Image 1 (cartoon, rainbow over the protein chains, first blue to last red):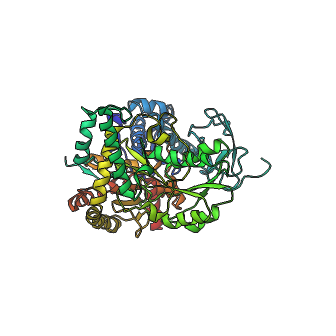
Image 2: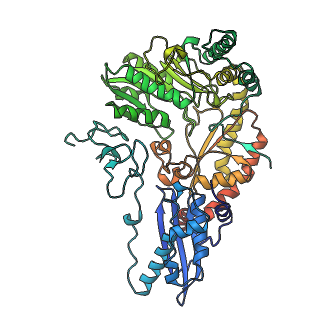
Image 3: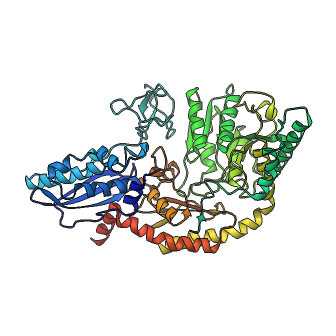
Length: 192
Length: 393
């Protein structure tokens, strides 16, 4: 399932930990998806003097975080901002397709930490962490075939050709026109 | 490296006796049971003997047993076949919220052809309240399906009470007993069920051999249309060797169940009692009193299942998890969510399921290997760091 390189970074992750006096902290993901990453950076001049991370998640998520920390250490901030999730996956010798979405967030977490550092330097209040970085997972897949629904149109599954609506009771995506929600069984509004 | 296999719920090893019974039908005795010649008759006799063995395991009569290729197929057959067989009467089905995906997705398939459904909730231990099932039944309901035991949390459901509630309302009742059959005593007449699914790979039989019991007189439409096999209710040439292995495994399960249960329950209890003592923030999932004899399940807080499984595997220990990361669909266990666990806790799902021959030494191996794994993963968990910070303040 995982490449040797992924297994190596999972079993022997580099740069795990917390920097109590970090210059910037970034966090992405949430337990709904199963993966959550926190990156801590120390900046000297324009370079990442130290990078540490903590990750809650699967083997891929831990390996990705470890690889990102290794790739970023010693780089300038601009160079580190140019590290993409895809580059990280390539560097690990590839990731299973179903892990690309949730687990491959390490570069995003690093970028958040750099933004946080830059905000602090500029005297700006750090961007509010909240709903924005919770990418919704529940309900973003078709309840019938589990195909991931298009970001811009969650009301239609292209594979099943079924139209959906959001259940007012549980918020799940359920078939439009059904009497009851497929997830919670509560009646759907009569007019929809 | 010593291998410690604690993943009964994924698959049990094949009993040598079952393998020996199968062997001739994989080699010389290759006849088609539907053939008139002696090679065919030999196969047909073996299939019918196996049917007797499976029937005896659950107190059924042989003609009430239909062989299928998997527990999932048996569940599809029951849910779709019984609901569609009665759609003239009504188009509503009731299932629990912790059913296996083969039941839940069969219900979704029915919904695409105009059925509606009600999901019955469970309590914190994963137990279904028969009164809730009764409440969900409407005059349009034609089928209720509730599992006998849940493979993720081990809870055994009050199937007899639910069956009784269905019978008084004149609604057919199916139970998915794949996790339970061959591991706890089941008698379809005493339970009062109309249909019951079971699978050989959960009681030391081969994979690809399973069965659906359908009470004589209960209406069911075929899922696989074809020839005259299985009374015309399941077309396709019989998997003779698999069926023979299933039959032999059923006979063995029936005779060995008391001794095996007596051997496994103390080991299970030790696991359930001691693991939470040896590791902080470990929650037992499922019922302590009504529980499969081979089943110990937990949520390990602040860590995610896949990481634990990978590290356990490196130590030679095989287990299961219901975490999002270990599922291909990357969704947390619907069972644990239905039981009221939050996503973060559900991600730490871990199931150790014992097999015939599991010893105290195996449990000791686990107790030795597992705490450092949890400690290591917690050491890199932002959720644990957050918890420690809050506890400290």
